Amino acid sequence: MTVTYTSRVATARFGGFSQLLLLWRGSIYKLLYRELLLFLGAYLGLSLAYRFLLSESQRRLFEKLVLYCDKSADLIPVSFVLGFYVALVLERWWGQFRAVPAPDGLMVAVAGSVHGADARGRILRRTLLRYGGLAALLVLRAVSTPVYKRFPTTDHLVQAGFLTREERRRLEGLRSPYNKFWVPCAWFAALAGQARREGRVRDDCALKLLMEELNRFRAHCSLLFHYDWISVPLVYTQVVTIAVYTFFLTCLIGRQFLDPAQGYAGHELDLGVPVFTLLQFFFYVGWLKVAEQLINPFGEDDDDFETNTLIDRNFQVSMLAVDELYGEVPALERDRYWDSTCPRAPYTAAAAPPRQPTFRGSAFDVTLAKEEMQFQPLEDVGDSPGDPTDPAPRPPSATRRHSLLHPKSGSEGEGGSPENPLGDGGTQDQWLLYPSADHVV
Image (tube, rainbow, N blue to C red; front, top):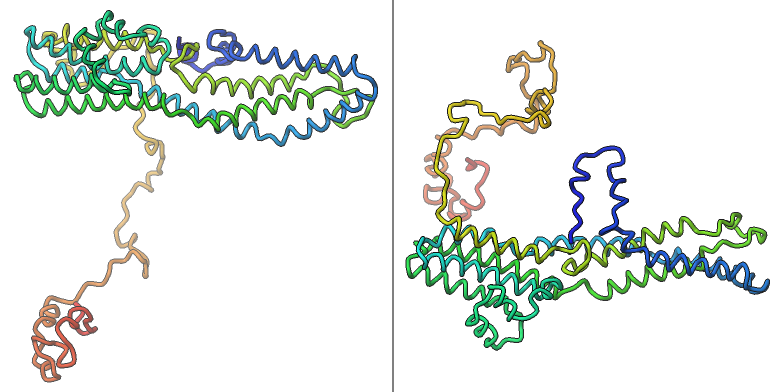
């Protein structure tokens, strides 16, 4: 379904995007041509009625209506409302793509943590990954129309090999009205704990890794389900749709060409077909159609996500990783650069880079005269007097700090003592909290 054109614009060149304008599948022309033909047909119908069917008095009245609608169309903030809406929908579209669960991290954790080359170890690894794939499939089946058409019932899941009959009986026997994509995750956790007790998972750190990957995988499933559940507020979609279509209903009348003989301002030319109004329709309604296509990328539009292809890829890759590739490590051998102190991969003639120096940093482009590169004596580069960055004055000597704790006998004669330096009028706490200038260290 997805229309991929990345290779066509891999290199920027003259008219690079122009070649994309001729594509039909997934194009704006395919989305918009019906609405554009309907608008043009309605416009031309009104124009012909104005020119050939209305009486003279009716034409004057229609001309007043045209002038009024043309003036009033500017009051509808269509570009402002539509711009914010499309930005919101595009951000939501990208978030939904990033929320699609991929089993790659889970399969690597299972392959590296669940050991055993015998039949028991193999069935444990395959069943764990099958449970992960089943959880993702239950979510995709709930949100994607093509996936639901492929697996409309749990019988189809059994026939496809994602469920056994016993698992289907347990799944359908669970009394819960909610989506049960979390049940295979619970089975995964229970089976991983059983593998730990059997010694297939050799330590608790490996079990912890399995649980972390499972929770990450389950979080993607839950987020994708909630994207489908919580839509863009309906009022926002209604406001944008009403604004766009009301604007062009107004333009349908307000952009009519009037008789130049009547001398209306802005109507000196009668072209018959409103070229720039059609372009405006193409841009604004096309913008709205883009939002309409992106708001749910799990449908059957040309640019919707290929969910069935994702299911096929994820299921095959996960089974290969934990079964066919389990314990399969290529023989170790020296690489071709073993004896090279400066290895460098070769280039083909088509990919050879131009001969130019490697980038080491923009500062290396600075040029200095020879005399500017000579070190200067430190006395010539000292700080100026009063510089705020000057270091603070050095504190008094250690003897002064010692005299703070043990005052001289002269201070005792003034009423102080070693135990109470402030004399009778002060306490030790006051001396510590409010020292005088003589006691500053």
